[in-house]
Image 1 (tube, rainbow, N blue to C red):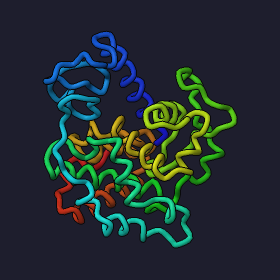
Image 2 (tube, rainbow, N blue to C red):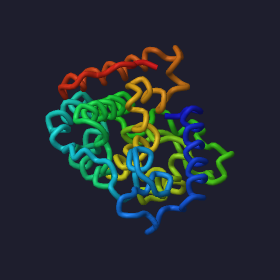
Image 3 (cartoon, helix red, strand yellow):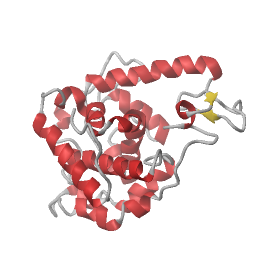
Image 4 (tube, rainbow, N blue to C red):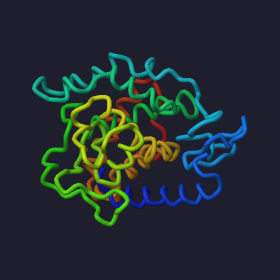
Length: 267
């Protein structure tokens, strides 16, 4: 997920958060009983406050049981596509995925039950594509690539560490490892390898990225999620083979979960 589109989006989120913070910084105990604390840390009502990544108050949650949708059979159907020699076979598990969701109560719980199923299908479609059906934990050849954005002085790189792809959605770049670590509880800048060593942190990092960068565009169609994850490297005809791979997994999982894939599948 190494794209300038993602970087621009991330910077926009930070700037929006700064503006919001000038209104009511980080909410604290300032919200009334009927107000939500938004993802940017200020109080209000409506989808912008109570929707995706709402921090507190009467946040939107449709109450769907993720465990009832992501069954052991569904998860194993992905994992069993990986060769027995794959390191991910003993690293990724349904139980750890469900444990990770305890920190993200809105994951796939915004909108209708059908919306929830589509979001789950989308998440696992991207994870399947990026890890080879949960075969890989780390990006192949990633250690030789430079994923340090030195302009992001708010998340300074440790010169002895690599911020290449790790985990179900291949978390990449210092400006993702830094805030992910702060939010979910690991040293993202000085110990990015934690995402490849701790299965719970690995799934949490993937879901963190999803909630902060992808979940908000699910209502635009699956193609928008491709653009949010790897748009500059795949969309607009850059790499149609990879785009189609993601779409194929998505439509396959939608079929398994009994939901229509919706429109706007490509980017």
